[in-house]
Image (cartoon, rainbow, N blue to C red; front, side):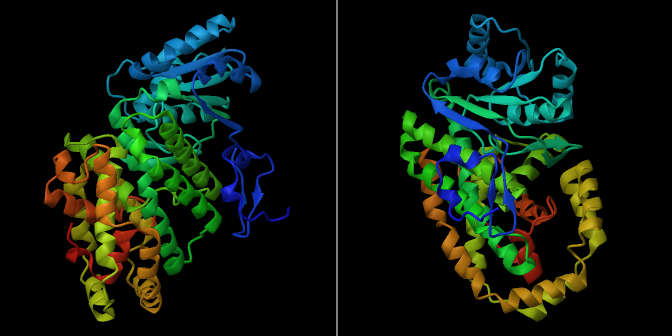
Length: 448
């Protein structure tokens, strides 16, 4: 297939072409989403969309809030069209994307149905993807808030055995976002959506750095698609506080583009980095110790501010080979495992097992990475400057929306944040700021 350059600038629905895109990065990019419809009153199209994609009897999945926002209207529309359906509305006030919630959806799923409709956004969408993959039925998401970037991705962010993990699941065949519904989303969900999108500044920066140091796969076209999503969202930020439909639409499109980018790359790298790891760890501690936590996007926004503070310091570092090698030589794995167990509780056990597969603390491998880091160090500050905004600009953007920008706003102490940074390098097999700092022997010297 002929390579197509510049597909990252195509109109969004043209990115869903059936044949996909042959790319100079070596991958063939493809997403199984068929179409996205955003507009006022478009929920009326739900029955026809279900029929268009082969559904005769849909199963509707919602929580208490999304049922009120759009579920009841969806039911009325299906009845008007004489379409049979069944539904399940989660009874719990605070739904978590975990094994229990997946079990509830599975046990209440009507096997006479042949199609699934997710009525909601973040957690509902993540759970529905798993249900759709397990049943092998297509699904549509009827969005109720611009709160996250997973609309068009083929992954679900879930809690498994107390650890936040990403499961490869499936794409929705279509995304339906009625602005009359989405513009009424709680302010906090709008803040969360912006928190999730600004994280992409960091994720693209770290993706490039890992490509430089570890020769990790990288695609500039996919990165450009993410930058495009960032631009759409940031330029619309001022309109979000007054719930301007055009601003909400731009943010929704930006969030969807980000999900497409993840699908095109077949990894979450284009959309998450160290800032997401901060959020995952806070979630894990909340599950284990009932400590504070907040919406994923709210936490990710704060994590993004922390990441920008970290990288402002990284760009001033002058690598010291002897210092870095001594730091690694003194690292006590047994002692560190005890720290993980104390800080994370039972979920640390999975991270300890993960390290046995990853071997990121292996002394010989560390020395190899260090040689590359030192050789290419002059390029790293340039990447940081090219990709990242200033701390002040990010704080102004988020606080302008009323979102918190400091971990103390969520009740996290300086000590807890410091320890969280240390653990971020262990959550995923992903080269991020904390791994770079560990390799340099500088992790303990970063201020937050």
